[in-house]
Each structure stands twice: as C-alpha cells, then as structure tokens.
Length: 360
Image 1 (cartoon, rainbow, N blue to C red):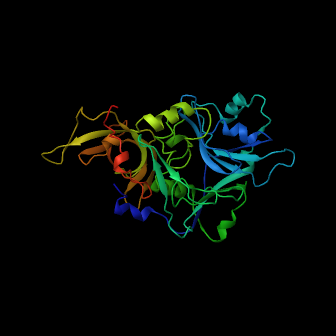
Image 2 (image 1 turned 90 degrees about the vertical axis):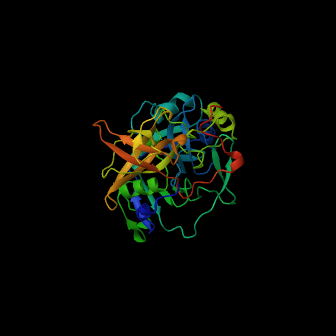
Image 3 (image 1 turned 30 degrees about the vertical axis):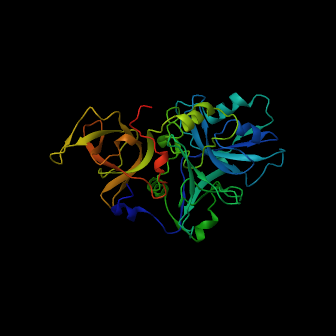
C-alpha cells in the first residue's frame, strides 16, 4: 500500500525551515555523562549525537529523544556536555528530570533544565540525492537500518542532527532562544503545522501524542526502523523485554500514515474499528472475526484535498483488501481511514515474514 497519488501534493519538497513546538531540553554533563546516559537510553551513547528513547523497566516507552553534543560546551565541567531534546507534556510517566534523579546515585554528572536557552527547528527539502538504505530484519518483524558509511549517520556538527529517522526528514537543530537559524536566508520559513504534516507524510511518529508514555512499545512505535534502538548493546533500562521481542516475539502493530475522510483533524487516540467488506456488494458489515482495533494519533486537516491525514497505530492483521477501517468519534460520527506504508519503508523478505494472525 504505497502513498495514494492524490496525497503526493501534500509532500513539501522545496527547501523549508520550520519551528518545532512543545520541546524541552535538559543538559547532562560531567566525566561520567556518557556512561550514565548509556545505561538509560535504548541506543548506544558513544560521545556522539544520536536518536533514541528512555524506556520503562517493563519495556514501554517513556520518552523518545534526540541527544545532541552541546554547541557551547560547559567551561566549568570536565567531560562531555549533552543536550537532550524531548516532549515534556505531563503524562503517567515521571518527568525526565525526576527519572534522572532516580538513577544518578553517585554518578559524576550535572543535570540542568536549559529549555529557556534553546529553540528547536527543522529544515528539509535541500538534501539533493535521494537516500537509499540497507536493512536488517528479524523473524519477529523488527527491522533496523544498516549504516554503511564511515561518517556518523546522525551528523558531527554540534547542535545539528541529521534526522535519519526516515529518508527526506532533513535536519533538526538547537538554536539560541529567540534567534533565527542561518538557514532562514536560503529556505522558505513555514509554521509548526508544516513540520507536523512533513513527518506525518513520512510516517515518523514523535512525542507523547504518537508514542504514548507508559503505553507504547518501542518496536510497534517504529523506533527500530528509525534507528532509535540498539539490540546489541549492554544493559539498559527496559532492555530485557525489548530484546526478547526482537528475537522471539511478533510485531503485530505499526505506526503508519493514514488518510482520513474527515475534513477536520480528529482527536488523538480516537478508536479505529475494522469492518469486513461484503462479498455481495460494497456495503460494510461488522464481523467478530476481526480482533481488536487500531488507534488514531496525530492528525492534521488538509484543506487542499478536502480531508485530513495523520498517523495511527494499526493492527497489521487489518491491512487486508477486504477490510475497511473506520474512525468513530464519541458523537457517533464515523470516518473512513486508509493506511499506507511510507515510501521509505522496507519490504520484508519472504523468508523473514511472520504471520501477524499467528498466535505463535
């Protein structure tokens, strides 16, 4: 299910610069900063910038996060200085500051909230050559990118990350609060909704709406495919269940971009019910044979096409030609939902496919 041709007009390909709202930044510095963060993050911390997540001991996601090398290293602290960018929206999860305080113990690190010092921006559309990738599949349906370059995939310029979560995502950067990025002279300046539409069209979940703290599992949330999980590193919080799923489990859900017939954006976490298409006519009939439901996440209205697009956590067993997906609002109104795989999503080799309908 590739992107519907009618939606390709929503892809903004000209050089664009947009702010990213609702982000916070913590500073972690000191001689043991790398070791401290490496024991908490699900990705490897090697003194370089990267993307990853903090997990609950039971393997659910607390925060998806970007880890920057500080553009202005601390002169008062020895060792590296990292800046951690994340979504601070209150949730069932402990605040990231409290999480750090719980685990810091005697680690020689200094932790500060520097959110008032930095803005977060994204830029895309000037990459030039289309990126191709290699992938490593597990029998479970988990998949990870294979970086075949000698250069660090997330970039080496402090404070600027190459957003490798998906080809075409561009870059994101930390800019001093109130300053305008240097790219403003060569890129069209857009609003925050432009960035939301950009990542929806690329199938990239982000923040607490898409990756619900204390509820979302990292592989179902595409953190594997987006390069945010290291299945071969040493111990970290939440490792056991994550690695077990990779080796012996089965991925039954994925976050996918969706087209919604509603002309306005729908509330996040709206339920998406499956219905079996009748074999006698085009009517939709309900059936008990389809298990569970899917969940709508971020959405945005697209007036140019008279409908809306979004991301949804979709049960893979519902991705069948004979199944229709319908989002049902509390008021009783329902909207047709069509999921598709982003252009960059890899095709799983036949010998690695796990039947999502299997109970094994």
